[in-house]
Length: 412
Image (cartoon, rainbow, N blue to C red; front, side, top):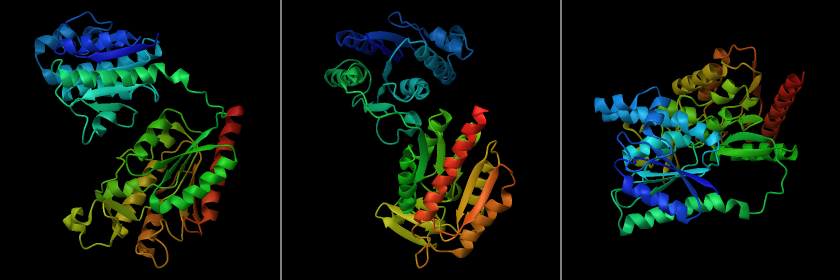
């Protein structure tokens, strides 16, 4: 029998969670009840709030006495984030579901994000519309709008709860009914791509696949770079072909597709073999033309489509982008390679194209070569455009050499 963790505030929403518990039984699942509320639950859980608080170094009685909601929420959320992966590793549950408003969702979502990719995770929440990135992060959490507040059982809430339970029951119980994959497991390579670097990555992907690798391509739109970094930390990849580091343009210029200040750090920290470049580092991204910040209205702007406006990075910004990249690559503790395509870094940074700028490109390259002083990092200027097949296949070949060298070293 599959085991379903049902986590939530059994003190304030005991009726709702008791209903979910019964639905689990009715669907042939064994419920594993985790109480994340501050006060006494309305029924006995399998994991108490005292246990959760203790995992974060807090005493639940003290939290009750303090009557500080923010402190209690922080303590229980931290405890859940530490404890839940341990419970999963111990085989206590196979999937997890929760429901609540912003508070209840915030209590459990960080812990769900800490679970491995593929573990069924469902959140029924009043917050499941608009920007859910603060809850989902880089995980595979499924969020379902509660429609009405999670405040009692009624015609709407019971319908939503049933659908959510049917969804997670299907994930848990129907997996075995699908035919097993007949493909042999191939080593994985993570690659980054943007619309304006698509030919490059397509060429490299085809080359690597012929060599027996599976290539996972991440769209470098912030929501692509972040999950790739997360999966690198989890050890998914044999190598990284990070040819499109454009998310740093948005981080520096205040664009809408930043992946945050930790982009380009995971492969360095994990010593995963990598070949990197500066694909699409000629542009920052904004929304429709009218949404471009006033300070950029007189810049070289390109309407990529009705919802995306690109801004050409200038020499000052290119220098800063190059410095940010070099700063992270300088931390390398294993051999890596930086390739700089001298003929252009995107489809529209090419002869006769709107973002061609020899001075901005030179500023980017000079910042990288001037800042990089780690002997483990090889920088090479390649006399090709980034989308040339020769450049793409050369990058793939260099990555394969790094992977082979690491394997040989580990075999010694």
